[in-house]
Image (cartoon, rainbow, N blue to C red):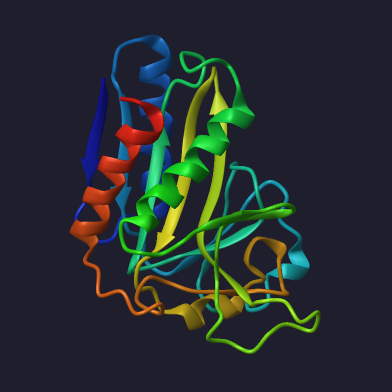
Length: 216
C-alpha cells in the first residue's frame, strides 16, 4: 500500500532529504509502506550528479544544494509541486527505464486533466509542452517549454527524489541556472498556460493519474 503525505507550507530541503533517507531505509527493511510525499520548497537550486558548474549562472541568488539524484541543475520554489516518490522499483519489475517512463506517463496523464498536452523529447529530460503562441525557433519548429522535471535515485531498489510540476512558481527564478543543462528552451507553468488550477486540484489529479498509470 502506498501512503500519500502532504506537507503544508514550505519544507526545508535538507530536512526533506533526511526524511526521504529515513523512509527509504524503512521501506527497504519492510518496516514502512511505500510513500509519495507532496510538498513545496522555499526558493533554491539543486545540483544533481551530472550538474555542470557553468550552468549555475547566479550562485548568490538562492541557496544551492548538492543532491545525489540523477540529473543537472533544477529550481524549486513556492508554486511548484514537488513529488517525492519512495517506491519499491524491485517489486515493480527491477526495470529502471520502465519506471522512469511510468513517471513521465504519470505527469502527462496529470497534465491532461487540465487540457495540457505534455510530451517526452529524445535527449531532453522532463515533460514539455508546445507553445504555438510563441515565435518559432531558428529551425522553424514550434517552440517548446518545460513544465515538469524528473530526477530519481535508487537505493536497494527503493526510489527517492522524483518529480516537480510547475503550477505557478516565479518563472524568472529559473534564470539563475541552465535548467537541466538545456539552454535552447524555456520553462512554463500551468498558470503561464492560462490554467487557474489550485494545488489541491493538482494533487487530486496526481492521485487519480497514479492509479491509472501504475495500476494501484
